[in-house]
Length: 224
Image 1: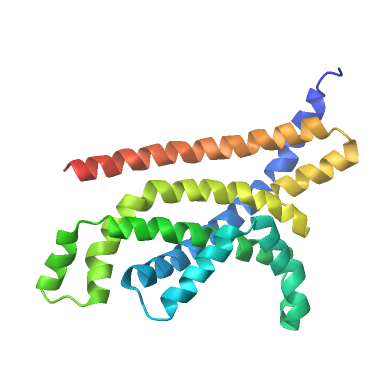
Image 2: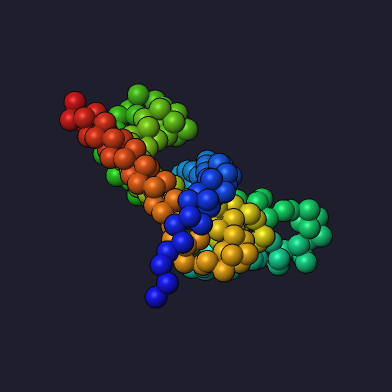
């Protein structure tokens, strides 16, 4: 058994850290769009909007029922063969689109559950003062649902960050892609991949601290 090449690992640290901003940027953009799309789909499902409700159920079923990697390949390699204008999409855009739609399907169900978890008396009180459905959702229901869903949504953001590692299969040189290239050039695969695992681990642990603080604040708000 050969010893770890610690000098190589130390030299690789700054190389990998250069790609952390891209990884976090991809994850953040995907999270924002996934959250917006998921919120719309959750409202459609709760309000049972004709036609849209059926389409939303099919969307959620498809993106929850197929692997993310297949979806990424479909966006980057498959759809451009059918729709020529999509050939202009690069790997980063395709990765963000795939991750966005994939996690929007999961988040929609979590947000829907959070909306339904708001006490029925809140719904009745809003209707009793003459609020329209949109006013009720915007002013009363969604703010309370956001508080319920917040810890779960942070977990999804953690999963999104880890899922960006699949972007290297589309030719994107992000954190995982950089580690793959460095390992291929040095043949020190164990050192490269254990180091990239540690970088992801540190990022996730930092978000876990944020999640705990968020849960503590929300717990105090509920206690009041």
